[in-house]
Length: 533
Image 1 (cartoon, rainbow, N blue to C red):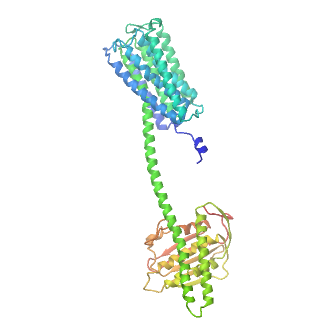
Image 2: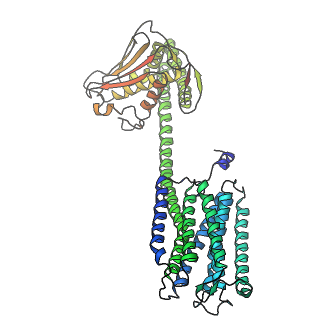
């Protein structure tokens, strides 16, 4: 994959990761649970309970940690995806985390004297605090369909830095207004009671903003993050209803319940991010293991292919060496048999060509090329193979008995590759008979016509044969019956034959030699080209 193609690949992000059916069910189940809790709490929301001053700072400390960690994770998501929507959401969670600090410090009876707070400071900070999440979600929903910024890593870090500076400045400004300028703000509280006309304006306005955020999310719900944000806003709306209309004063059941909804709202997206990051880590670890295994397999394959090439090249080189030794023996005689010497030298030339053909054949197997079919005489290939292996056949004391059908029809195919197949089968047959001492070592090479549109070539030896249990996998890669074999020769032979539209089979009783037969169509079955790759 090129760099340009990689840059066009969509990055995995919570904003574009589709929600599964299971994830949607979880969201709706949590929403139903929250609604049930709201239904149970609502009739008794006004009931006054004991004042636990430490309850509010404890809950808000948890909210601070949750929102701060959430913002950090969302900023990390932005640094990867460069999504403006994720950036807006990260800014919103950083804002809600930081504004908790002045709110808890200004809360009556919690940390008296730490801020120059008035009786209305905490209430106003609460409204500024709760407005942050729905406004951030609205920005997220409106920016979700926008293209990523295309910012590089440095500019992304700069955007994150400036976002943090602006949020800190905004929270500091709101804190200054609600503390130093609290006497200029409309009254929201009378002691611990919500008793102001402003409350009846601010509360519906807060619910309206949250409802707009919910409507925008619902209209575009696609990703897993969309669904979890729907749950966040739904919980926030329940919180607004309880705090605004049902809880008439601090430390009522509704007051405590609203803080519970606030905590749930804070924890939802953090839980989602941690869940998805855990899944991502699991997939990453699994992928890393698979990549290591694939790398190991590729190294093994390279080693096997290299050994296969060496094996294929060693055969004609060995034949050339034997013929060279025979030629030297002839030259030592007086007078030398020039006709025999000429045949040996021709065989050596043929072996040299065979080396080149081996490389061509292997190269075509692992590279996608188009080769036009050409007429191939399998009788001629059979005789050439026997001639090129003559030295090896004689060295092993094997008697070659070719039984070739005269006027055998030519077939269409790649001559070099088909010669490689037959060369491998004959060479394997000669090697198989190397340890045979209780019978004659006979190699039969036969050709015949099959029906009207195919020919068959058979190689039969009188060696010890092949265990019938091994026959089913004899053509699989890396399966071999030889002590020093690598199991690629027959696999490559089968690949070549099948690419010619034929089939290669083996049979043996495990005692009286083995028979390999390849059947090839006379005419091309599928195409006029051999696609070797």
